[in-house]
Length: 288
Image (cartoon, rainbow, N blue to C red):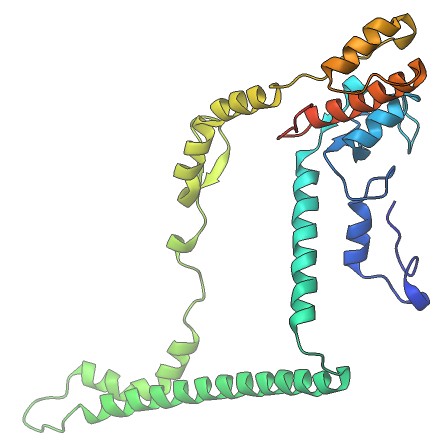
């Protein structure tokens, strides 16, 4: 269970969110990162495949909430495996980048940040001021240009359009400010219903969705076949197994047949747990 607040932090300091996330990615049995995570559907608790299989071999219940569960009810949690791999990779890269950076005192960093922030605000203020100035200047220039463009020709009668042009300087600013800010209909996000699954998809992604939607069944079949390539071994009732048959099973697994019967049983049990745990993996290791 992940701790919060100041629990586990040195000197009573507040824990960082990354520390809490790191705790959540650890198995509650071995306290290491999840390795081939398995979820218990009844309670949604997760453990390493090998850890929970070993635990269930002598007590058929969840180690955390004690709900009854058997090995056959365990399910893979591939997403959690991906999260662990991504987090460990990101943590190592972050650690590497921090070690590569030259050490700087915190006091030297703070003024730089504040200076950058203030300069950023000042530059933004200057940008806004310049924009408004250019806008008013541009409106004035347009008005002056329009007024100067009308020659005082006494031979021709002044038209109503020329009078309206002369009135523009007083109206131009109001017309610029009264421009509606309604977004264009072309920018609106339009959803299209998928003809295969009926889900509403953004129009720009509909072709990509159709490709994945049409091939989803094929992917399911290929994934299902890849997962079922290696079936887990069935449990062995060692009390009913003769020593001769036990040694035969050990030899088939490539294990040693030396020692007492109890030692051979423990050896085969350990192999059985490890073999079945690898069957939960997308890329199971060899059983030999």
